[in-house]
Length: 198
View (tube, one colour):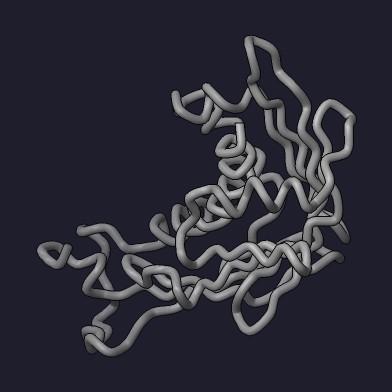
């Protein structure tokens, strides 16, 4: 059970990354398109693209993942994220043949290119889950070394500088309550996208 809760939280975080990567990938020119005579990139240069992601993109991806990814579908029956001052995350978790509602309220904060998600509250089937219990479960989960649990502050800290930078690096820019969008910068290593450099 503990790994299922941890998976849901990490899934939300990784969804932002995957959606941004797909958007950037579709901006690359095809083989038949001209580059306009631009000089080739030097290996040390890394193109950067700014991407803004809203709740619609996240929810569309969640719906697709639940319907088409067998592993995700085994755990989630439904998912919905709402951006505002806080992020309200509603999941339907499959337990013993039933779908149980799991609600998570997070406050996002962008610091030095990284994302800190403060856990305001969590509940399952309308029963509150104390943050101490939630973090006890999350700390035992197998998370990447760039995702750290700060139980003392009730924070999930995502350090994108520790994340592998190939095929793309991520730097958080800001979260706007006005537009309800998360802005991030993706840097793409030319070697990572050129044929024969995988």
